[in-house]
Image (cartoon, rainbow, N blue to C red; front, side, top):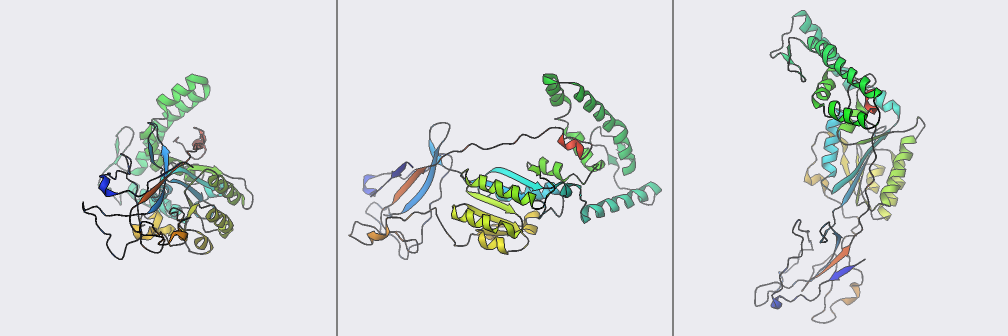
Length: 382
């Protein structure tokens, strides 16, 4: 580890303090002092501290503070979304990005999680079906006509809009898919980019008008939010083993924060190992039980889904802190007037010293997704 020590910085030398990159200013925190530091004749205080800041070299060859890397692992078998999957994934992604750069967001489940219809989906479909019957009989009249999201045609009822969408736009879409299957190589890629991949209007309309063939589109909605969805084998604890392997992989990649969305107590040992490896962990679940005791922070799952997590809910308990280094300084208690003594529980005194350490950039693993995989769940491609 390459380090840069700045020691006995005297304000009389008119040395400025621009210890930050032009892009981002690193936060330097120290314990509040009981008495204000003494000022020199030119008005600058004399402070002394020991703080470890990881530095990495950017593309321009300039050392800048290292950004924390965050990984989110979601156990869909244990903690499925209680509402729209896309909204839940976006809320979880927004929460994870508060802790650093999100480098991996994965969800694991067996096939039963993707074909199962939760109660809230059945209730929504039942209400929509009853409303369609009332509109078709003329008992209920919508205030505004239904508008097609693809061509803009207006229909009196939702049934007429579905009929128009299936007879026109869905049929045209199927012709394009049949044409895509007959092509190969570069022609296939060009045809997909031109006619299918950028058709956002069709995808948005199909999500509301066309019900998926199997399930309720859980995998496709999570992929639309940027989540890598992995279907494991139909074996007991298959998703747990896949999550544990991914956690071990994250420990070896130099990850700073690990989010685990689960209430399964089988992950307690893995969280304990993560703590021993100085990997900060955040558990998102319904109860602060076995996992919450081994994690650095516990966040309620219902609050994450509703976007109700504030800054006061993200305060870390004082369990361990490896960011501030005081090794080798305990034996120097008040040796002389120019000496210094650093204690985590007391104030920092006189002059300051910054420790810059060079971090290691590790390549981020990216998994390619098959373009036509979502066709098995519905009539649209994301």
